[in-house]
Image 1: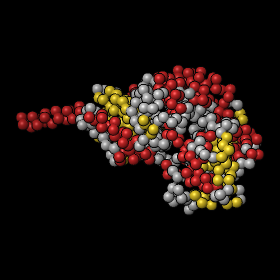
Image 2: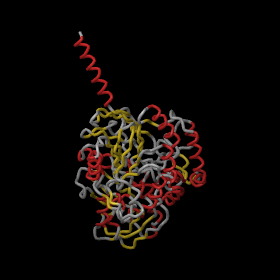
Image 3: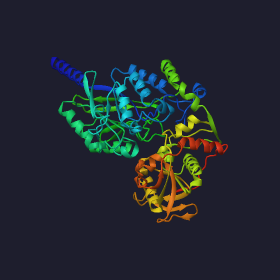
Image 4: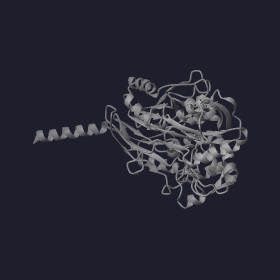
Length: 520
């Protein structure tokens, strides 16, 4: 009897010791917010106050504040992180740059953030101004900043935070092709994320840190590669690809978390529509024993924080006159979702490229090419405001005209479909021409049946092209346009051109007509 009692006591003591050794933390996370400080509609564009009152809207910073504070209250131990691309997407960015993002992220108490590609949209200096206002570290391990004076003393590769008595390492990464995606300038060299992460992890583990989380603005496919190519990473919080992971939504891109090579990977779509919430448990050695959770949909069931709502309304004041101006009419909803415009002919792409070509048709221009990644939202039926157009085309790109050979155009189209599997923004929407691509063929040999008007393209002939200044200057891999003849990059703003074209059409009816064919 005594022996039994002693054994039972020993077992209880062991169980208590094991329980005490467990460490639990809830990771709250956001990604790809893109300055959606106000609520969005189901097309990820602006949502009117009337529709918001009727429960038709999602997100907005006021709901994020409520959701984050409620999540903090539910959990004794939490971490709040962002996986990049707070910048760019609405007039808030065009008017305030990163100031409002810093203000709101400070208010929420973020622990860290990864650098996204859009943080570089107005160069290193704009990112530096944001970081100087931020009360949290901004992370990017896979970049050499030693020659960039604006950032070399501000961005760090990794950081260590202490939560409930335990140290947690955080490592940030950004897209390796940031120089193609944005405007980081000539002084920064970007590298493969996996070795960069591993170097930071190794340094941390050498200092006894057993819990490491990667904040990755590299996209879901690359996050899978990182999980396979690194060791001692306990969690990847992702961004860039706007991937929606969920265990309850049948339209999700995968489970939440997805687990690759034993590493949980999470991502919470984009635009502030969801707040990621993952509870992760570590054993005494710092190994993950469980990772469970689900993104929280920020719909009408989440009350808007009154103080935040009032502050956003105050900041919106100078913007309202611009964005509330009705500039056109849509006969039906115009599809501009990234899942369509980065993979096939899309109605928004047709309207935008038609607008581009129409504006310069008297200049001997025959072809229009617009990168699908530059199309950022759909438009619903009814009156179209300037604000909606600016949400679709937020980058302040200008029209660029130039001349290149047919061979160069085919090379550009090959580039455009070369990263189809990744949903890359380089996918080419076109006007004045048609083409076929084979998604099963190797990149570089996918394009066929290119027609300019009703005539097969001639590789040795010179064609006039209109695009946007980002693409013309090599963005999204279109470096074949950098040396184009007679290039002029200072045309009117693409959003203005599109708005004026839509206005001239009367009620705009969305359409596709076989400009881009997919080979079966």
